[in-house]
Image (cartoon, one colour):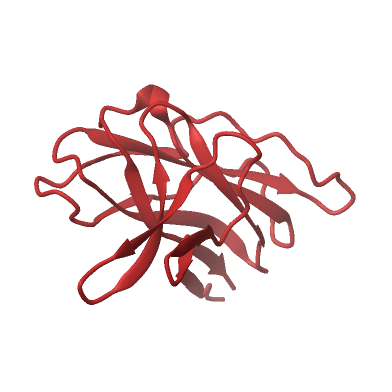
Length: 175
């Protein structure tokens, strides 16, 4: 018997602009939320979430893990006015199996769910940070999983805002 491995890759804008009013597309916490900002260029109107360098700021998402779930990779497309230093990005997963409450505690920001990504040498150039095999303790197909994306200011070595444009996830399934 053979096993077929399939990746379901999806990328999402994290904010949107209605004219010059920016809004987050994902759930924001009541404290320490990044700021939604419109970025009007000569040719494009886009939005991003600005994560500052002094506070751990985050947004949240949730998904149902598909049949055959094996692992999840996260990608973060961001930019900065800074040209040196590295932003510390984290993606934390916590499962809610059937019959459990839907208010679980996230795991700590740590190895397995964080990555340090160096700013480009030219201001406002886009970076892509990828966290392969994000830790998800006891996750199984059919689980409801909460996702928290954050900038870890405590482990960060870049000054100024890190501007997140896109958040993506690639889910590996085996059949």
